[in-house]
Amino acid sequence: MPLPQHLTIGLLSHNPGWEILLEQIGAIWEVIPAAAQITPARYSVVIIAHGAAINAALSQQLVAYVQEGGSLLEEGRKLSNSIPRAGQMKRERLGSGLLTRFPFRNGHILSLGMGVGRQITDTRAKRQLFAAPSAILPSEIVARQNKGKLRMLVHQLLSNLHSLRDLPFLTRWRFPNNAPTIFCYRIDSDHGTQPQIEQLHHLSQAYQLPLTWFLHTEAHQGWLGRFAQFEGDELGLHCHRHRTFKSYGENAENIRYALELLRQHGIAPRGFAAPNGFWNPGLAEVIARCQFLYSSEFSLGYDDLPFFPWLGWLGRFGTLQVPIHPVSPGNFRRVGATTAQMIEHYETMLQIKLRAAEPVIFYHHPTHEQWGVTEAIFASVRRHNIPAMTMSQYAEWWTRRSKASVSATIQNGVLTVATQSTDDGGDAPDDLQIGIEHRGQKGALIPANATVRLDDIQWESEVYPHPARQSVPNFNFKMLFHSVEDFLTRLRQ
Ligand SMILES: [Zn+2]
Image (cartoon, rainbow, N blue to C red):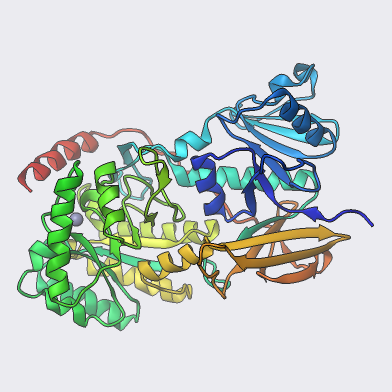
């Protein structure tokens, strides 16, 4: 009887960016312990990230791993450079040449010509244009790196590396139960008047969809208590003064003042979303100290799955980040888009998110009204039967998903999956399902503890990540104008 084949991805050494990606994807993975035997039966794929130290003995072990049939992913030419005559191996360039595949004896090495791990931990932001049906494209200051796209690329590579070994690729599913996606509607209450806010609340009640409010406390003094009556909605914190500061002290003062005001009305926010979507070290530390469950800032991440950001200066991961789609009706208003164009945009985005199995999280400001757009979004969510939740409900579920320790083996065509909670006290969600991909096809989700014959799984021909190929220019004249305008607005706040 052959040995059981483990479906575990081995990461050669700690690397924050890769760890973020593997957790987002929901892979079954571990950092390879120093004493471990690196064999094809033990690890379905091995990843060598930048910075991994490889001595001669380890290099020999890794070469043997590939020779004997293993699949190896390297950043740069960490291993392939050390293989004698690697240059003569049959090599195949994929895509724009950023990927090179070396079939080597019974296995494969895939070389990534870019530092993915480093790009994932990059915290810089810049103004970027977004694909949309309007004549002038909307723009927003968002994370410089499109981390969601990188994550999709890595997901596909890992799936392919398993396929090359004729092994299935398993992931912890991204949503409760077998939901194809989930919907959250985030409202930054910025200067919203009471009638505007009542109107939004009324609309959400009519569709029975919960809202996730991020309150600008300064703007609603005198009637903050009204929010506490919004049953089913989540009340998060935006700010008191509408500003995100660079320093820890100024952010702390602004946030603590707002928290105290909310506390007086019996409101204890679990979520935070910074003014203008800005994120910086000074802010991240306040968010962590105030023990928020999550925060949401598109200057750190957008159009992506949740992740625990790496706080490099502290050498640890921070508060869960829940990315959203960063284009609001307000961005559209600034470029003169019509209501019909906005509705078309959100319908397109919803379809893209469904195909990519990403959460549908849109956002809006009450002062921008455009109730028709919100209503069209709500109607579409209902039409597609997408489960709606608040952002804290999703953040809580995601946090528990990160506590689920899954192992899987395959032996004689029988797949065995076992799930337990990690040692640090968290409970894996009861409704966790396992996604399975094999030979470029996806199967129905399976329970987190299961024994199934691979042949008995029903396969569909489409895999999950489906990067939307939208080519967007880098610049339009409105961007410059909006940068100046935003700067002046911030000076006034
Ligand atoms: Zn705001």
